[in-house]
Amino acid sequence: MAIAPTLNDTLDPRSRAILEAAFQTFCQYGYRRTSMEDIARAAGMSRAALYLHYKNKQDIFRSLAQLYFDGAEAGTRAVLQPGLSPQQALSGVFAAKAGPEMEGLFSSPHGEELLDVNFSVCGDIVRVGEARIASHLAHWLSAEAAAGRIAPFDPDESAEALAQTIIAAVAGQKAPQLGYPAYRAAGERLAALFGRGLMPPVR
Image (cartoon, rainbow, N blue to C red):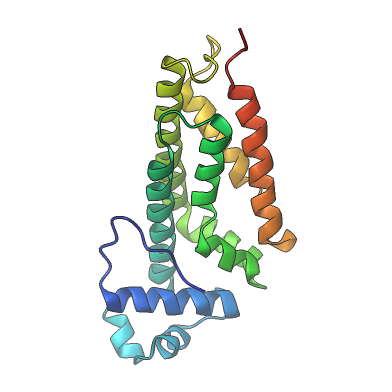
C-alpha cells in the first residue's frame, strides 16, 4: 500500500518513508487507535526522531491529505488535453482523484472513520484541493467550448459552476463500505453521463 508520487514532489526520502508508514498504520488501525509510537515503529525510527519531522499525528494526517491533493491536481492537469472527448477527459480526472491513497482507504476496515477524520481534521485542505481541481476542469471546459468541441454553456451557466458540480458529484460517490471497484465504476458512470451532456449537438 503506497502513496502516489506527485509531479512536483519535494518530500525528502525520510519524510516520504514516514508518510508511507503512517498511511499504512492509519489504514490498519484507524486514526483514533493509531499513536505516534505506532507510526514511529512502522517507520523504523524512534518516537523522538519522528517528532523532529512532525509535531503530532494530526500534522501527519494533514500532510497525507495535502500530498493526496497535490497528486490529484497534477494528474488532473496532465490528463486535460485539448481535443479529448468529454467522457475521456472526465474519466481521466476521476481516475486522478481515485489514486492509490483512495484505494488504500477503501480497502481499510477503517475507511469510514478515515473519511470522517479527513473532513474534520483536513477540511480546509479538502476545500482548497477540490477547488484547485475544479479550476483546472473549468479552464478545460471553457477552452473546449470556445473551440466548439463541447456543447456551449447555457446563458445562466458558467464553466466554473459546472466544474464544481461535476467534482462534487464524484466526491459524493465515496462509500468505503461498497468497495473501491464500486467507487471507480460510479466514477465511470458519471463520466459517461456528464460526457453525453457535454457533447456538441449533431448538425
